[in-house]
Length: 371
Ligand SMILES: CC(=O)SCCNC(=O)CCNC(=O)[C@H](O)C(C)(C)COP(=O)(O)OP(=O)(O)OC[C@H]1O[C@@H](n2cnc3c(N)ncnc32)[C@H](O)[C@@H]1OP(=O)(O)O
Ligand SMILES: O=C([O-])CC(=O)C(=O)O
Image (tube, rainbow, N blue to C red; front, side, top):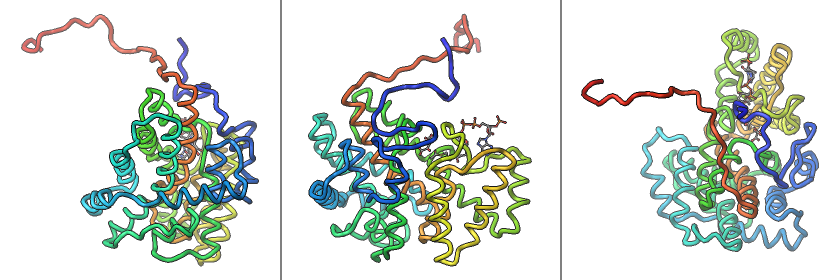
């Protein structure tokens, strides 16, 4: 048996959802650069699930289906109100609420293709509502009901603040959602696929994936990037802060990637968005600090920024609480998780690798009273 620590380089499945080939990311064969510059998030979700871009009529119907399914059961809102104030991370709240959504879905265990598609719509539509409702509840405010006239991007910001966002904010947020939607066999997607490969239900798969995304080596890195920028505080502090972290062999959040060694193609879009948004909102110091960190890490470690690095200053400029950054990742990535879950169901085999046993052997059982 050969072992690959962290399954590095192991090809665990075939997939036609997204690809990373020679550093180029595509969703269903469409280059991410084209999608980021031109597509709505809803178009991308449709593409991921249906293997084709929607025409106008299909998109209108799809958006309507999503809008009509965005409300969440009042019991889930009441449940969120009972969480210990100040102690609950929004990713933990999201993980619990998504699991709970399954309790209120009478089709949760219906594994037919039709029921799975209806659940996909409900999950995609409801995740933004859960995240924004939790954010308001912990601030002592009532959740804002989804507005069926708005796009997913605009609706998220609307439900968060109670105000319809301007075009700049909506466009930027839409682009961020497009860029985060799918990413081949990343850790959370793999987790979701492992879960449903036992023929477990979609809610279990998405709940498991949320748990995997939460970690700082994966989706949780974007919140940590902002923590680092906040701790640094000023451009003049970057050098000593980063040098100290590197000397102490600490990992710098938002840098490095298991697959990309010549750069994450999403980062340039987020870098430009960060430049624009920080300038517009008078927060340019966060962009300047990010550029300086980027230069230092690239020069000293040869590591490049990943999707989580510049997204942090983007979301900060949009006035979003820092611990909501990873839940926002989930609001987008649920589209990719679902595409992979549907692909797994359509050609399933249990995922069960082996472990190379390195523990004790030939141990002799000693009765309790003799130990
Ligand atoms: C959406 C996403 O999930 S993108 C990734 C988000 N995560 C982060 O930004 C967290 C910071 N980055 C990392 O921890 C890593 O680069 C990962 C987890 C993304 C990829 O890791 P792997 O491919 O497993 O590389 P691994 O962690 O083994 O690192 C290899 C070497 O590079 C170093 N390294 C990797 N990333 C970093 C970093 N961000 N800062 C400093 N050193 C780093 C490691 O310390 C290690 O050095 P060593 O060989 O001297 O021990
Ligand atoms: O692919 C990965 O390992 C992590 C990543 O960038 C993502 O999930 O977007």
